[in-house]
Amino acid sequence: MVRTKLIAGNWKMNGDSRSIKQLMDGIKEQLDPAWQSEVLVCAPAVYLPLVVDFVGISGIKVGAQNLSQQAQGAFTGEISAAMLSDVGGQYVLVGHSERRSLYGENSKLVAEKFNAALTKGLIPVLCVGETLEEREAGTTMTVVKGQIDAVIEQYGIETLGQGVIAYEPVWAIGTGKTASPEQAQAVHADIRAHLAQFDAQIAHKTRILYGGSMNPTNAEQLLAQPDIDGGLIGGASLKAEQFIAICKAAG
Ligand code: PGA
Image (cartoon, rainbow, N blue to C red; front, side, top):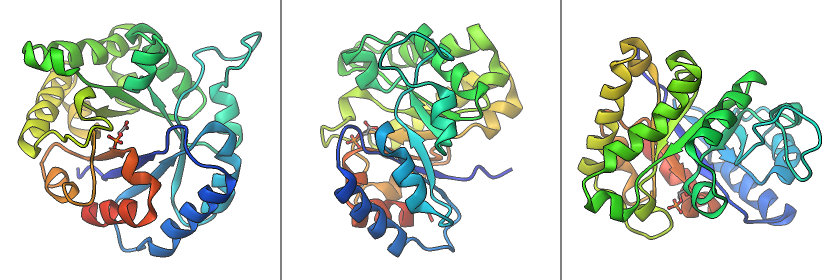
């Protein structure tokens, strides 16, 4: 079985209706239907309906960047999986390092969000990754496995296998510093080996994306690694030409 590559843009808290329309126009214009990869844009929640309308029949998938772990009720300011799915969302990021570090999301909460997404048919993208300190202390895999195991322990490997994993070393996010293809591949292979201890088939079919300063210059080499199944792209996803160049590199 070949894993379909996934190229996902994470717009974070950027853009307005005008710039988003421009960006989507640019992406749609240059999208090549011959590409095999799946293309996803994760928009700020308020713009999801706009983006869903815009992608139309282009095949581009639409996702959100966060969701509540709760199904519904008195949770002022929160957005549920059902709401995201109701307006046409298909994917949702969970546990992005900015959510973990700036909003105190721990791995247990992230696992609850992962599961909440699945209950409403959204595909969760579980973001994992170590800080520079953790890498230098040699604890990269301990950290990453802990973040992944939080889902497996609470909900099982089958649940994890219904989502996507994005390995994003924190030191590479928004810094212009990318993990080398070898560094990234090593962690991706270790993640897959770890999943295989629970279920070999799930390990084989689960897509593991790389994120952290992926751009048109480094994408091709990163995406050529056997265990890198796509990218989660922040900065470079805000410019149509750059995002498209990465999609092209994925083929
Ligand atoms: P970056 O962000 O591509 O700007 O490093 C990646 C991410 O945060 O998902």
